[in-house]
Image (cartoon, rainbow, N blue to C red; front, side, top):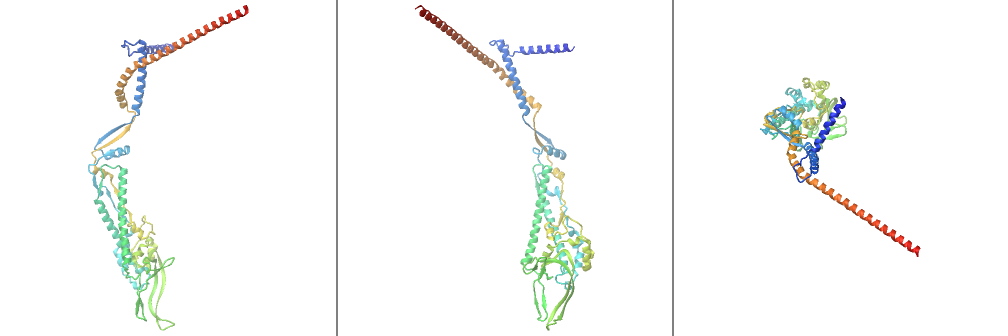
Length: 465
């Protein structure tokens, strides 16, 4: 059975081979022999096969760019397309100018000090009842009310400035002709937020620097006598105005030469001034009893309440035990509870808080869906590149095959003629070579015969004579 199948296959193969051998595309050519016609047919088949391979390879490897348009795409479809075709996707907006507040909003979260009881009217009013004449000139209780009034003013100023900045920011337009991808949208929003923060912080710093410059340049004295104190000399009935000095860890600083002098805020036991006679002379002497009671962590006193506040920190007011110690000497602190935690460090200075606008978080809310709905693209167009497109390969073969076929059928007989002529020339050359070889051999044979006869005659004559 197996031998029969193999024999049938061999017969079919031989029939196919014989059929292929008998294929003749030029059987109508009367001027060409059958052998040349078959030879030309083989050339046509060979060249057409090579051409077909080249055409298929070229069409398969060629990159085709396809363009697709999707009408009225949804946000979901847009997101999918922006991921798959980020470089070629194009969706034109129907509304190119959009107010910032339509897709971006802020809810600033301020430092706890700006929402605490420390800047409440009740607390500041309680501090204002302190009689400063009862305390030593460097006692913190003299300027404690001014510090918290300034804190209240700074918080209110910052809030008002941020509200104004946000109002201006919301009224501006965000302009885009094309719908932005989520990544580009986020990048643009980050840039807008960064610009808003930078502008507002710069304005606040300019305001703070301008305020400090006005105080310094105009030589404004505090009524609390933090920079200069008025000193009365009883025996001469005169008044003097010496500058205050503040002791730091390194050196002593005088307000006469440096308006930013500060030292640690402290509470003192102070019995008061009284007049007494000197033991060595009959002159009157001003005397007082003084003792340090408590150092307030983070708080500073200095030449002006404003400059000392900027260099202070709220470290004490995060700690319940520190507030309780303050309650012992300043009754207004009994109204307070500790500050809650924030992203600022407890030992951050008020100047650092002010430079950051007392903001813990801007709490910005970005709404890409609102932006997309307002932009409302009518259509989205994207392009993509593709290889091995079967339809493109078929179309290319159909478009090129006819021209290639005509060319091959035209040149095949000429190729046969050229080959035949080359073969004819080669045969003629071989015949010429063979003829010249035979002539040379005949010449050599005649010469040998002549030499033999001449030699024989010479020998005979020599011996006979």
